[in-house]
Amino acid sequence: MSGMIFAVVGPSGVGKDTLLAGACARRPDLRLVRRVITRPAHAGGEPFEGISEAEFARRKAAGAFALDWQAHGLRYGIPHDQIGGRGPVVFNGSRLALPQAVSAFPDLKVILITAPEAVLATRLAARGRETAADVEQRLRRAAFALPSGIKAVTVINDASEEVGIARLLAALQPDRG
Image (cartoon, rainbow, N blue to C red; front, side, top):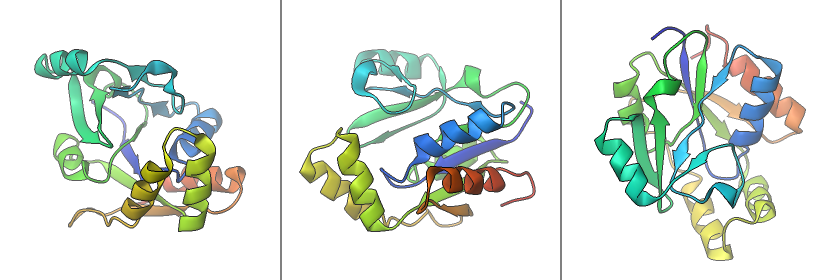
């Protein structure tokens, strides 16, 4: 495996997908992992491969994932075939899965995206994927601290999309973290 690997983590609604898409558009050398998720492909959000629970279990048993985790009632997988190769790799990860991610990728760089609660609430409501109860639950989890021993570069996404993308691009520099 060559190139750096970055896990971008943060609470739901913080804008990870938007910032990642913008960063990749401005830096063509970045390779964004297309996650495998047990969510219908038409559910929106990031570009992902939507599969059934049974297919996810089959692929996991076959060793298809370099990393996988469960959150919000869904399964997420980072396929092995998207990690190797040239250039920096970025993936939208989970704060809870960071110990497993560091074990899988010892040189992993972690970028934590944050935003004020009011900003998160507005973004979650606007995307329309969750019920009001789901939004409330996600807001309660927003303050979740990183697991012990995990170091991260923090990016605050509380301004315009362009400012957020610029902040993420600065965090993606090899000398950060």
